[in-house]
Length: 88
Image 1 (tube, one colour):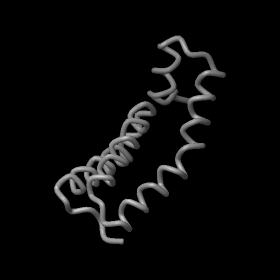
Image 2 (cartoon, rainbow, N blue to C red; image 1 turned 180 degrees about the vertical axis):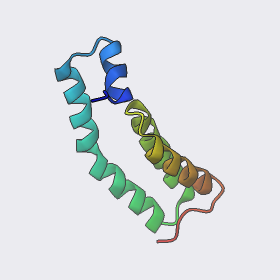
Image 3 (cartoon, rainbow, N blue to C red; image 1 turned 90 degrees about the horizontal axis):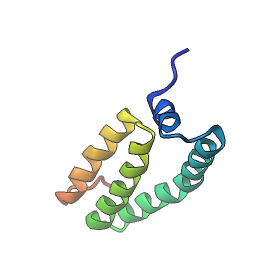
Image 4 (cartoon, rainbow, N blue to C red; image 1 turned 60 degrees about the horizontal axis):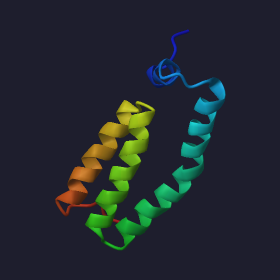
């Protein structure tokens, strides 16, 4: 099968399987906290905090070339920056 682009990119950067695994585990370990932070910012009606949290998530998603998720987060970040965050 075809190797995902993000995996090929890591391998091309000289990362071995263990390093790639550590990166993936770190992302997955921090994801629940990031989602909680997003919900807290939304519930607090704080579009600036919501935008900053979305921006940080976008950075992590970029590393893994998660294009669909990146597109969705970019739309949400833009809305939050415009003060139009999602309703709780």
